[in-house]
Length: 273
Image (cartoon, rainbow, N blue to C red; front, side, top):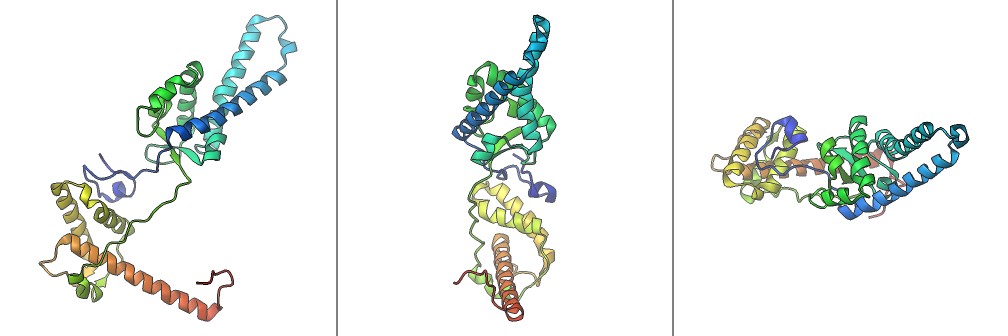
């Protein structure tokens, strides 16, 4: 499974890397948001039927059928498609529950994606009273319906509490070397890749772990001087570098805060500690 996002652009891809995804919406959440969207569509449809110029149709059955089809397509397809296109994946139901439709690569959807989902919904949601969409969504971990599979999309939760992983610890045997090391400006992509690898290395097979670790270690070494002790394990070295980098960043931020306080005085909006 290839990893997308930052790893793809920087070339840090392993066959077993954990894919970086936004959290997918659960099936109950999708059903609840869908119920709100259904109510909105029904209201729009009733309003459209109420304000339509039926008196102009008269007894012309062909014109009557055309008007009914136009109202149905406009309410059941055009309204959801326009809503998702203009709001980049949101409908009223999704807005209430903090959901959004995104592409498989977690990017925003466009008109093409919304149109495919809307046209497919005509069959799997409206003609089958939602039974087909419910059946398909219940059989996959991302609760994707047929329209999502055809459009290459899925629904994610936006209102989630993110928990930051524990920072890499400083190996005691490498602490003296790391403190005196001259660290260059490590690219953000490389730093994130190293932290991801250190946090998830237990999920990889020994061969993949060794290959990925060696690659990241080789990419890191040009930013480190002097080189680590020759007997040091690459993973321990990467952990020491990231821990020392974090320590220096914290010290720099503290110095900036003290300087700002001396120049500008105490922040009136700061919370007392």
